[in-house]
Image 1 (cartoon, rainbow, N blue to C red):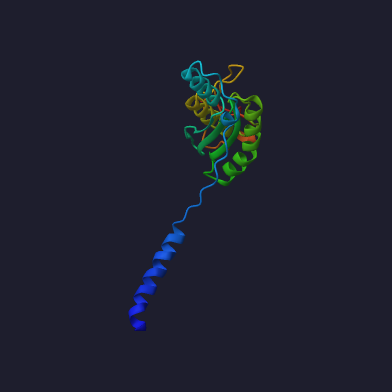
Image 2 (cartoon, helix red, strand yellow):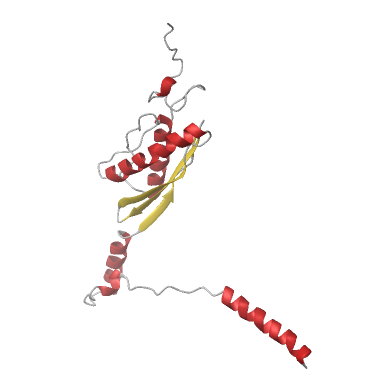
Length: 191
């Protein structure tokens, strides 16, 4: 008789485990801000719904990923979060990392670029000295994300960087670690 119950017990155990493992708790929903607003006079139901939707559109949070900007040292790509019409977060998804020096330069430049963009509320940011390519590609990816989100800086500024053409011997900043890319056709003085 015990052998007949074994398959039942095993089947019940498997079914119970499957139910436990597939359980997904739901977070309680909090009342929205519009639920706390007093009702308007019922002169026209459509006017209330249009006001509600226009006020909620200013409270939208958008998270948009910018284009991956290719450079000879690797790609740069950022993700931006815009809440209540302000840039609230910028996350670097990719930064130049084809070689150890690229990782070091990008790692040092990224927090400075992020802070400046958040402060200016624009992609029109200054290049970090010694990180020209990282700065330009970060700015270009950020501007593409802002364009996708339909975000316009309050002062109308836009990121306008182009990725400098850097010669093979250049380590993100020209000979001897300068802060600019080597212009095409530039020949250093001999002597």
